[in-house]
Length: 143
Image (cartoon, rainbow, N blue to C red; front, side, top):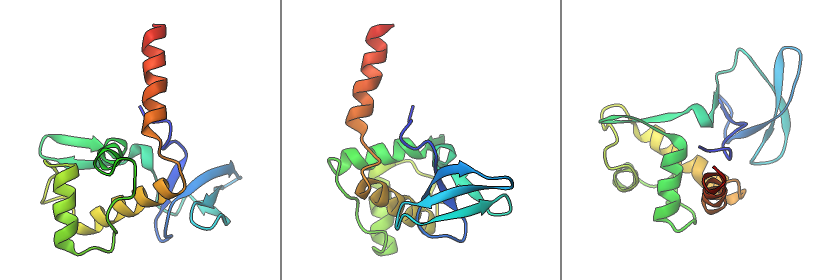
């Protein structure tokens, strides 16, 4: 499973994504993937690790990593549509990358976030599914 999302966080009230830089006494120090600025994130902030986020589907949940992988496959490793696209365009796009997503529980705002995060991680070259697959194949052949 994905090592590439390890240490990447979303902090409520803050735009963009962050990576953990270090631990402080009552906070963690994070660095913005957008502008490289560092700041403390306190326990009172709602902090979500991307590796722990899942998207609701009709049959259960799908890890964000797998959604990102679907987008990457659809776009041949390139950028997704803009998160600023219309609600209808976002819903249509989401239906292509995750056909059985739960339409009652996955809101357009969630879709915007997922696509915005994907594009940011893609731009910063954090996502590399072909390298990860090669590493997984190597582990399988060693076993």
